Length: 314
Image (cartoon, rainbow, N blue to C red; front, side, top):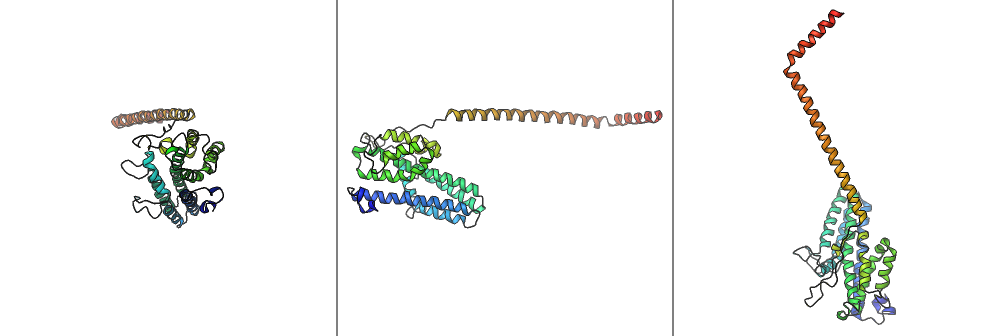
């Protein structure tokens, strides 16, 4: 309420900054959280026939009413944020202006909706988890973009001032609970630097905040490639503002891959030995069968003689 009225901590804020804080806060802190709630409620209603309705409502709130049937419109909800960030971070679907995150989320939405119709509740939950991951990426991109523009050593000279601080907080605030679940200490670092009333704001600098975010990507289920890096700098306005991080596979994962490789190798060898064994068995069986068929008369004659000899002995 203070932010809307421009009182208290926000008394010195101009109308444009207050508007950004209120509208973006409503879209990402309220509406997006409501979307998550609808998706989860739909799963909790599974296998009820009405479960899918909640996913339909969730998509309506996620996309908004201004996007149009093909998503090419200019909306105001979470869907629009991803489409706005993708050309800035080079994360659009190739040859389009559609955000990869939106297309991935939409595919999971359709898959989850179909799973609910079939009563396959676990599959619907897996789709929800992917939707959640995809929806975090534009918020992280927005947080990094505004942090860069707030840092005096980076892009602050070309920024508008309070507007970037308002937008930064609107983007990062919805992320904080999930960041805290991954690592409370790292989440605290991000929060302390980007808090709307921090003094000084971004005291550790953009690079520290960027590194803090990147350290949690794996925990959040996303990658450096998913987030990318902003490309709106330089004289052309199309150069990297910072270097993107790299997706490095840890040694523990390498060990797992090695173990899996060895297991697969053993299974292949076992399969080959089994096949060879069956081939030999079939060859022996076929040979015996051929021998019986071709030497039928001799075998019958031999068996007859044996029976006669046994009869005489008795």
